Amino acid sequence: MQNTTITFKDLSISEKVLAVLEKNSFITPTPIQEKVIPLGITGKDIIGIAQTGTGKTLGFGVPMIERILTNPDGRGLIILPTRELAIQVDETIRKIGYELGIRTAVLIGGDSMFRQVKTIKNGPDIVIATPGRLIDHLQQGNIKLDRVTTLVLDEADHMFDIGFAPQIKEIMKKVPKNRQTLLFSATMPHEIATLAVEHMQLPLRIEMAPAGTSSANVEQEIIVVSRGSKFNLLVKLLGETDPGRPVLVFSRTKHGAKDIAHDLRNIGITAVEIHSNRTLGQRREALEGFKKHTYRVLVATDIAARGIDVKDIGLVVNYDLPEQTADYVHRIGRTGRGGKFGKAVSFATPDQKYDILAIERLIKKTIAIKSHEGAVMGARAEKRPSYRGGFRRSSSRPSYAPRTSSGFGAKPSYGPRTASHVGARSYSGSRSHAGARTSPAGARPGGFKRSGPRTSSGFGAKPSYGPRSGSIGGSSSFRTGGFRKSR
Image (tube, rainbow, N blue to C red; front, side):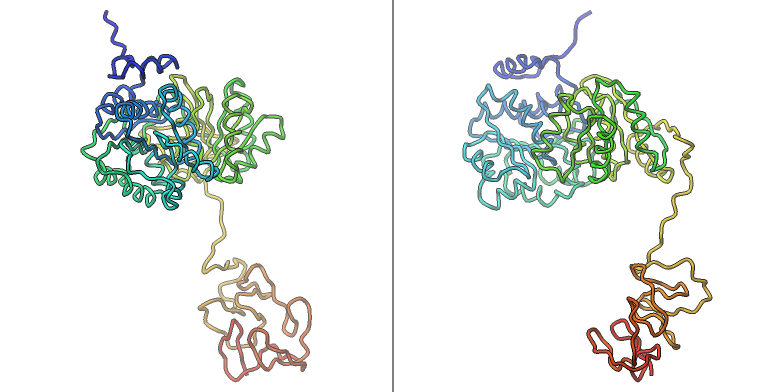
C-alpha cells in the first residue's frame, strides 16, 4: 500500500526554509498547516478557522518568511491580543527565520518603549505586536506600515471580545491596500465576517472544524460544587493527576488567581499566578517556570488562555466558568496538544445551569456532569440582596408601617421626623444609607445632643442652642439638601 503521508516537502516550500524546518524537527505538517502554507505562499487572502493548539503559527509564519525572502523590500505584520501570545509567536518565528536573516521586533505593553524604538530603528522584517502598543508607536511616529506586504490577525475573535476593534480598524487604515491578509480565529462572530468583507480580497475560508469546536483529544467534565468547596476539590484533583504533568487553573478574577496560588503554596504545592497586575517580567518568569516544570500549577485569568503553548499540560481546571462562553474553547485547548491527550474539569455552582447550556451549544456536544458533596445542578441560587436606586430596602419593615424617612423620589411624610439624612434608617427599620442608624429625636448623630432649635438649614449652617423640637426650622414642608423643614 502506498504511503500517502504529507510532509513539508510537499507544500511548495523552498529548500532553504525546508532545511531549517528539518533542523528543528518539523517534518509532518498539521492539517491547518497542510492547507494554509501552499495557498499562503501564492499570496492568497485566507480565513482560517481552527481549534487552538493546531499549529497556526507555522501555518502563517512559513508563508510570511517565504514572501519576504522572495521580496526583501516587503515586511510582515502580526497582530494578536496578548503579550504572552506575542512572545511565543516570536519564539516560533525566530526558530525558522533567524538562520535565514529574518529579524523580528515585538511591540507589547509593559515593555520598555525606548528598547522597542531601538529595535524598530534596526529595521525588522517582521513586527509582532498587540494593537494598543502598535497604536502608541504609530501616534508617536516611531513606525510606518507602508511597506507591509503580509498582514496576519491571529486570535481575531478575542481581539474583538476585549475591545480592540477601534485599534484594528485604525491599523487597517495605515497598511497598504495591496497586501496579503491572513486571519485566524477559533470562532467566527459577526464582527470577524464584517472585517473580512471590508478589508480582505476574495478570501479563501479554510475550516478545519466548525467554529467553536473543542479538541477531540480533551476529555471534558463538569463538577457541580458549592463555592466554599472549590479549593478542597482542586486539591483532590491535583492529588489524582500525574505529578509529572503541569496543571493549568483558570480563575475569573486576578484577585482570585492570586488567592488560589497563595493557598496552594501554603500546602506545599509549587504554584504561580499570572494576571494583568503582574509585571511583564513576572509574567515571563511564571511562563518559563511553568514550561520547565519549576512550578507544577499555573493559576491564570483569561489573559493567558490564548498565550500558553506548553505541550504536556495534563489537566486544565476551570475554577470559575469563563465570562465569555467562547473562552471555554480556548481554555481547554491548552491541553491535548501535539497529539497528546488531556483532561479539562470545570467547576460550576448550582446556579450556573444556563452557563453550562451555553457552553454545550457552542461546542455542540453534551458534557458529563458530576456532583461534589451533594451539590445539585438547578438548586436554588443563593439569595442576593435587592438594590434599588443605590439603596437597600430593609426586609424587616412591615409593608403597613409608616415611613419615617424618605429616599430619592419618595413621597414626604407630614409628621415629626426622626431621621435627619436622606435614606437614614430609623429605629422602626426604615430604609438606610450605608447602614447608618439615626438617633432618637433630640439627639445628634454621633451621640451629641443639640440644645436648641435650628433656625437655618443647609450644609455648614450654624446651630442655635435652644431646646430641639425634633424638626428643623422653616415655614413650609419641603426638602432642602436632603432635609425637610416644617413649621
